[in-house]
Image 1 (cartoon, rainbow, N blue to C red):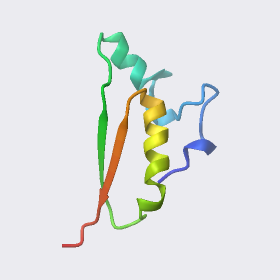
Image 2: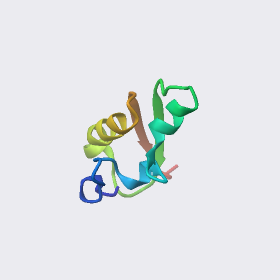
Image 3: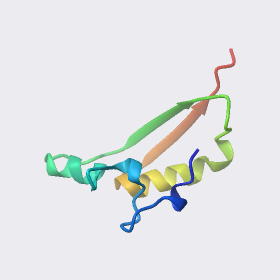
Image 4: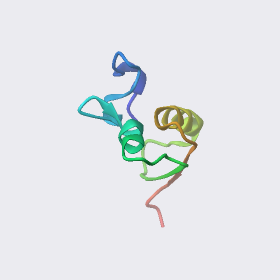
Length: 77
């Protein structure tokens, strides 16, 4: 997982959440919608996400202005 705190822009939003300088949440709002909630599923053997899952949920929730749930699984049978 990248470290968003080291690459945030002046607005405090990670560049991955922007399109031409506009946040994803703003693009959704401009279209007349709002984000109600988000569910993220990560499938990877490494890095292990469990220890930082709460942090990931908090950062993503703040960026999107809606509750985000993060779950992870491995490719092991």
